[in-house]
Image (cartoon, rainbow, N blue to C red; front, top):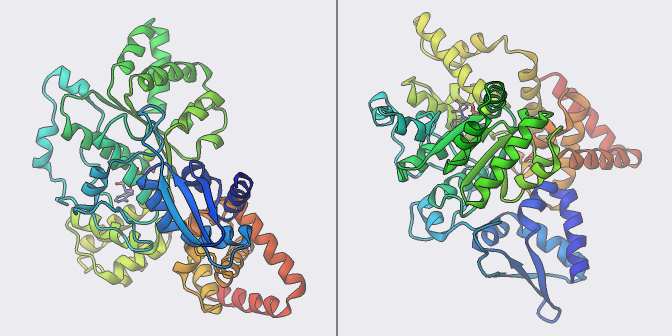
Length: 484
Ligand code: ADP
Ligand code: MG
């Protein structure tokens, strides 16, 4: 049984990437195989994991386990292990949290693939008068609310398939600080919402328990503060300041790279806070293991809790974000213009926001309405990287069209042979025609890691050796992309 499960994990690692295995499958075991009923029983650590796996990976499980067990059709049963102790908690999200995330009585939190999830809690815009209660008056309160930006809230964070896990986990920890995922590690490319989520956690936690000591810090600032504390012989006060917090939000941890002494200090602070079950939230641009120049004992600690990624949003999520931002800034934005901007700016929400502001400023200055034409003029001179991102979009759409497949299917986790081949060809075309890195290409197609992309490209190359019709088809696709 164990061997079969290990074999299965290897396949999933190749298909879906090692992060998926680490996050979802490592804590699962294959408990039983009933050959007469064709049913396998999987043991999962809790309901949340069970539901997530069923929603996202049922096809994958059925296909591969059936093959490995030589069974025609498989039935999957899930049983939950007993709850774990609060320390070293990997996966416990209380049902109450799931309920409140959904705003319904039934617990299931079910992200809808490819449709932006509505934000269910009251979605009032953050207007200046609301900020008054955040303005700090006395020293103690100031200390408690250190550096939290009141503008970054859960209410104005748009949730879609690219960030739903990070968002769900971020919201869940606010209900039960230090008890569910500790640490929570959020990673993703720049401008994809990590800082926003960290502040949202700070704001939400403070709303629930105003007496908490919360601290947001970028690792850059932490390094400077640490150096100064040594210079002025104040390392004791420095440590104390951090060790007494209830919630630490530590942004861009990758900047601790190669700062041995600062890492040492951070390691001790981490241990003290962790032992007291104080909530630690970290962000980075990559997965802990891949942060260069970071002590391995720190890397492994960062994986103790939950590692959640944010990847590039799909077009629907980008449009939803644009509309939310337009509402916030009271900009009248038509669907066509939103779609146009969303398709031009591919990989960075900060740029998406910047483009919206530029387009609306241009329209205001020239006294025009915001039309697609006006937006085209303003965004015409977007720099190369954006063009490249835009290009990935074009490659994906044209490839999908020639295979009669849907872009959403290609981006999804679907494993049907037909879709898998189109996905592999899309990877191949992107590598061949764009300047994007393998990781960026993998991210673009459903958050897959670069080893999956390499594997896919290898497959296409070997198919091209023997399949002349595929060679022809790829030529046609290439022509169409070049003339688009
Ligand atoms: P990161 O820290 O990952 O580089 P930020 O959190 O600074 O990115 O996000 C960049 C900008 O994009 C911010 O203005 C943020 O509010 C906005 N943003 C990112 N993700 C979302 C989202 N899902 N919904 C709304 N705004 C978002
Ligand atoms: Mg940031």
